[in-house]
Every structure is written in structure tokens, then in C-alpha cells.
Length: 195
Length: 217
Image (cartoon, rainbow over all chains, first blue to last red):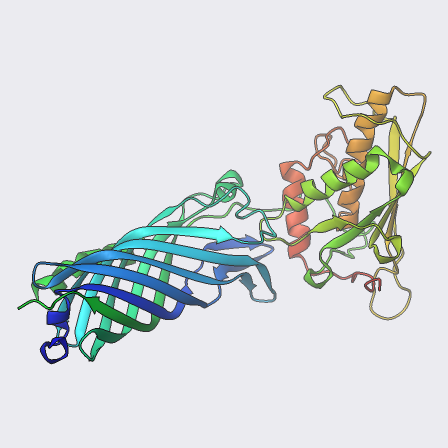
């Protein structure tokens, strides 16, 4: 019945989704020591888990945790080097709605947590502040049977980045970091469809 | 349509916020780090990290000061340009640290005013005569101390001088004219100063003209 009614009917159920994709990030730091260079994570594989519950007829609200992991590198004109391996956790609250039977949009409010697993420089030696994050996204959806939905998603989020050590070393302000992720999601719906 | 319009302010806010950016501090080398004014520059390259330090078994407290000195210098770098570690086998080391006479007095450093002549250090190396200029072998650091000074003065001096000599093994071949920099010719402090930090950051951002020695097998 959900398949026949499309995603709008699916949203009247609790949904649990697995998200797999890749995430690209803009520079965390721009620095200049003899020559200018940037510090940014490489494109990272991303894994996410999302639970949403229906609110009214067209909206769903829920929570999501996504994690990505890649090398953090300095990138200059003449030299590049690996700084450390960086894991990024992104828990968020999601508000989702259907714009068309095959198109959904969402907004996210959450946190970004950086975890440098094997610090080789001091950039993260005193930790990184937990950063508030704002995000939006769209998804092209397709029902798979009565309880499953597959989707191709495109997400964007932004947050401010600095660290305790950067501030102590005389960096002023914070960098606005933009992240774009793209991937596939598979969602299972639980409960009964709305009439 | 109304929903889509509701998303626009959010998207606009984050895009406009993207115009902001952190501003990095200026870094300039405050003192010379090249080899005897020759313009030749040495620093360790990423493929040779961590740099391996060996300390003579009879070096006593200097071994602890070497470990702490490596840590203090490593901590100057935001992006991991330098790392060092202690090793047990001298044949695999990039830096050999000897102490003379052996077995200096033990103890914890204090904040007492430094007795500058209680010890001294020398760091040496040779460069290859042919082919691309490179270090010919491991750095050799010789730290000597004088027994007619009090134990406290010797211990304090050994801490400062050991950390200073480790600075030379990073490639800081010059001395700072500022007496409050660790790389002053007669170090009065035991940790790199902000000036030492910016100088070594600039050194590691400069293209090296002297290559590291071949890695010991």
C-alpha cells in the first residue's frame, strides 16, 4: 500500500535508514609559512544512521548520526603532507518533508566533533571545540516494496572551525567549513501506513 | 512553494557566513638557521620521521632530558612537520647523544638562576663531498658537565643544553641573539620560545638544500 501511495504515505510511519556515501570538505585552516597552504580532510567515506518519526501529514522529525574518516593533509603549491587521520562525527536533528512523491528536502541542526586518532602535530593536541552545524539536503526517492525506500541524497552543511591550539598560536577568527556529501540511503518503515 | 522559500534563508545564512575566515599569524625567522652563513638549509623530511635519537646508556638524567626535549620541539609544530623518538640501538639512530663524564648527577630541574658554565654541548655532522649534498651520517651530540658545580646547577644546565642541542639536530644551525630564546648560544631557558617556534616553523617551510643522511638499516 505504501508503494502504491508513494513516499508521502511512507512518512506516516517511523523510519530507520542507513546512509552510505562520501563527504568532501572545504579547508579547515588556511596558513602561510614561507608559502601559503591549506589544511583539509581528503574526500572521506561516510556512514550514517537515521531514525525519523512522522509529525503531521507531511513532515518527519528525527535524529541522525553520521561518521566519516579520512586523512587530514596540508596542501600547498609545492608540497603536501599527511597531518593525521581524522574522524568526524556529526549527530544532528533532522526535519524532513516531501516536495514531490519522488523528491524530499530536509534541514539539519547538529554538532560536528573532530577526533584526530593519531595526532602528529599539535593542531588537535588540546582538543577541538564541538561546533554547531547547520545543514540542508535533498533526496531523490524510490519505493522498494511496501516497507523500504531507496534514495540518492545530496547534503550540504556548514560549521565554524578552530581549535584551542590555533587560538593560542595567534590565529584570529574561525574558518567556516563547508561540507558536501552524496550517497545512497536505504530506509525501512515500521508501523502502519496512515489512512 | 512556501516550504522551499523557508529553506532559502537558512541556505543564504550559511553561504554568507562562508565569507568569513580565520587569519593566520605572520611567521618570520628571527635568527639564521642556515649552515654557518652559507645559505645551505637542512631539515628532516616527512619520509624520515620520526627522527631516531639514541642516548648513551651511561648518560643518566640526560636520557630523560632528551625525551622531554624531543617532546618540547615536537610540540612546536602544528602540522607534524617534525617528530622524534628514542631508540635503544645506536646503529639505527639518526642522532647519537653522548655525555662526558659519564653518569652525571641525578635530580629534577629547578627554577634556580642558571649557572651557565656548569655544562656545554656540541652538535656536529658532516656533509657528503660528492653528489647531492646530504648529511654523511648521524648527528653526534656531545654534552659535557663540570663536577665542581653543585648538582642542582649541573642538572639545570643539562636540561637546557640537551634541549638546545636537540634544536640543532632539527636543523637550527644558527644561534639566536636573544638571551630568552632556547637557541641563544648560552641558553638560559629550557623550552623553545615563541621566537624559536616561528623560526623552526619557517625552517621546515623552507626547501632544504642539504638532504638527510641515508636511513640506517
